[in-house]
Amino acid sequence: MIILGIETSCDETAASVVVDGTKILSSVVSSQIAVHSPYGGVVPELASRKHIEAIVPVVKEAINSSGINFQKLDAVAVTQGPGLIGSLLVGFSFAKAYAMALDIPWVGVSHLEGHINSVFLEPDPPVFPFVALLVSGGHTSIYHVTSHTKAVLMGQTRDDAAGEAFDKVAKMLGLGYPGGGIIGRLAKDGDPEKISFPRPFLDKLSFDFSFSGLKTSVNRYIQTHKNEYRNMIPDIVASFQESVVDVLSYKIINASMVKDCNNIAMVGGVAANIRLREKVKEEAAKKGIYVHIPSFDLCTDNAAMIAAIGYHYLIKGKVSHINDDVYSKVAI
Ligand code: KG4
Ligand code: ZN
Image (tube, rainbow, N blue to C red; front, side):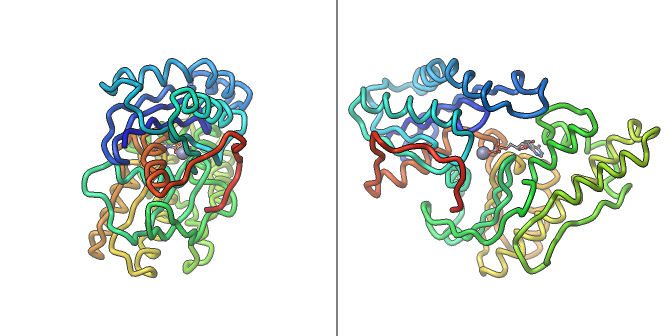
């Protein structure tokens, strides 16, 4: 089944053509970073306007570079939520109209289930059941995943998402937006043990997270080292990153042991973090656990993952209807 995936939940306009939920023929992502970076975060109104400009050229490019004719498409899958309503509406309305014009089925899917299914676009995917850590700009959650379409939430952040903490710390240090990638690069030259930031475990047995206290600690450190912190940026970000990495890796390994799963998946934008990838693999190897992390392009927002999860709903017979609407928040 050849599916066109469409993703516009935040600040990336993306389209992709995927066969049977696994084989990517094309994946196009148009980023709005340049538009939002002067504001240090996504401006929803600007995001919607940019999606409107980008959606047609991005879909055209995805189809052209896939090597197939648009008449060969069997269905359209599109992000229905969660995300920014104005942004979601652009992709969702486009998908509805496009599918209706081609007279093919279409299905609205969860962005979060899309991220979880991104591991199936890589060779050697996980075996069910597995435990997944979703770490992105909007979410930090652990799921027990028993099928492509069933993920039971085990725990999530009570305040900031991990990606949000990276972005806010980068902003405090004047490093630019989005901060995750920038911090990851700068941290390579820093000493992760230089500053002892707290490890916010909450309860060690629970799978909930909290990153706002850690963010406050970094802020306090900057305030109390006003004269010298500019020369210490690699050490500050390396120490901050190590704290986040310690907590995330501990919880995902612990979750897999509690659920007796020897496969774990780590997905979402923060899963692109080199130190996090390294640490999770290192800790998992000690326990004989297999780790599945998508390549960098499939960690951050993309439409291939939307086509992948869409496939699993479509083969079960699920389709969306003209009156269906987008949603901003969900708990899956
Ligand atoms: O999954 P994603 O593209 O969008 C959401 O669904 O939120 O994740 C974006 C988040 C941003 O907060 C960004 O700073 C973070 O992922 N990120 C990283 C890295 N690359 C992107 N965080 C840490 N290290 C990275 N290398
Ligand atoms: Zn995402």
